[in-house]
Length: 458
Image 1 (tube, rainbow, N blue to C red):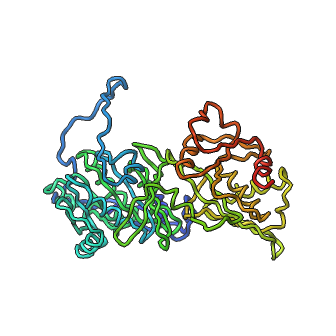
Image 2 (image 1 turned 90 degrees about the vertical axis):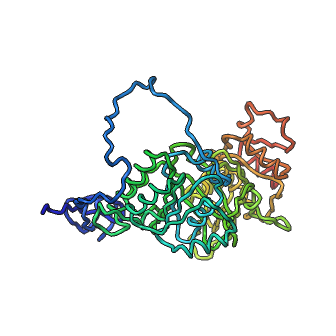
């Protein structure tokens, strides 16, 4: 009998070792290295794998000019937000990995997609829920479909047998951590099992041209559980974010071989499922009865989508000696930089003040175009002077206190005009090659930060 081949894998990052050791040298985690059986010899051929028995010849190198290029075939769904983050639709033969916290709505999003796809045969494979549980969720969503098939199975060999008889046009796996294959002798969810089952699904997707959606668990740090190589193997990685106690969810693209990685989709979780939010600026701006100090509106871009979001700042004297600097949804280091610019270039005494900054709506933004809105909110709270809710801002602040131009300023101005804003403040260096007459909104341009404060607060 042949000796069983084993290896040691870190369950946190997937790094492989020849022998056991207490600490993983790749991710510096302790007691995460486990021995796993790599390959089990099997004489049975009951399992079905794409390409078994295929005697095709090996491909030969081709010149780049000789390769025939055809635009990728996409399946356009009725979910416009999902189409946006995927780059225009589902590409045939692609493998899409969706990660997110438990209870965030991953299974609801995928079941909703399966039920709403008309004219496409969808196989929804669940290793976590029973048929009755999925039926209850489908009834709650309020959709009916004759082309959605449910399979509760975790063995890839059994799944491929059903695929061979059903021939689905889209395959959904919920989740990849629950699958196991007979070719690896380790528990489901281990590094070896996740890597092997994902490899089988990739081979099936590429050879059959069937799109495959994989739902993945995440670790406590927020990254997708399993080996990091899983994210390298798939074509697209989507991250479903949001607070389970809040209604809104954000679908981000962190990797996309067929489109942009800077797009996002916004959903609202309701009792009847996930509702697409076509105009997110309206939900990101609170409706206030009267003007409040420390609240401004900034124009940002997420991919090709302009968003107007609310910046909330609170400045108060430090009661415990050392001033606090707290941010939610904004980079804390950038806030410290902006406070230093206000202190040095604007002569505002913020060294003894607590500063709290919040991006309304639960968004996390990194766009430097929000700098001017952040600075205006801080000074508004410091001086207790409200900023009109009909004014928005779009400019980057430099270390010299100058206002720098931002990209796609036309899109930001058009979005502000569409939502009824009367005035927008931008950098004077962003006016080049811009037709000012096509906008009805009043556009004010400035070169220095202090000039904006003079206009706003006198």
